[in-house]
Structure formats: structure tokens, C-alpha cells
Image 1 (cartoon, helix red, strand yellow):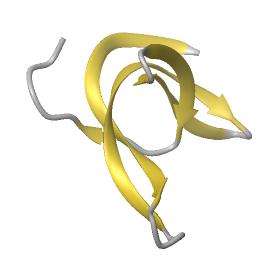
Image 2 (tube, rainbow, N blue to C red):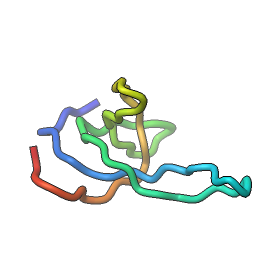
Image 3 (cartoon, helix red, strand yellow):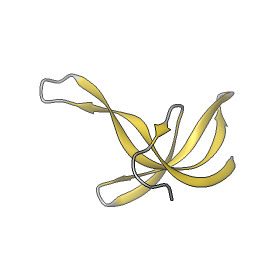
Length: 69
């Protein structure tokens, strides 16, 4: 992994709706670095859910709303 100066971005998440279908929505995250997964570039991000934080990798992000860190 190569670390970056952390910045705010958004990542795609799929949310299950009441009718059973999935809907794609963009959620806020903090980008911490980049890494290779299966020979493809992925972003290492920190996400928050249920009052806890976790790290994960995603292959797509977009600039976040609000002030940069």
C-alpha cells in the first residue's frame, strides 16, 4: 500500500430497498492510500457504520462534498 494525504471522497454502496431490489448510492469515506488487488489499482478507505470505523478497499471513488481534511 502507498499512503496518501487523507482526503474526503465518496464510494459506491449498494443498499437493499423494501421491494427487495438493490440501489446504488454514494457514501462518504476517507481515502488513506492506494494498493493493488488482483493486479488492479484499489483505494484504501476508512468508512463508518453503526458508530464504528473500518478499513476496506474499493476500485472506484469520486471527490467528496465538504471541506478537505
